[in-house]
Image (cartoon, rainbow, N blue to C red; front, side):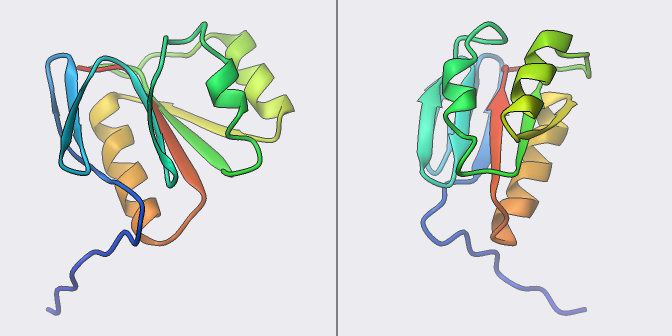
Length: 117
């Protein structure tokens, strides 16, 4: 088996998470966050749609981490994002972080909006 080092270029992967926080690119960030190849920003949760819609020209898919367990996101949030041309995948936060990191390492146009576990 051959192992390859993962390279993220200038993007910042999720390196860890815990109760109320994320470690992203070597920095600890508290609370819900939005992450894409250009940076990290705080997020106000499902009602805070403006920063998610701002991703429309930069990403194809947005992974939404719903906390420790998988949950449905509000239907109006999904409809708004999809109308803006953003694909949406909701899953538990740990799975969303892993999926984001894998696709980010492949150079895909992805973003992550996550609620801490």
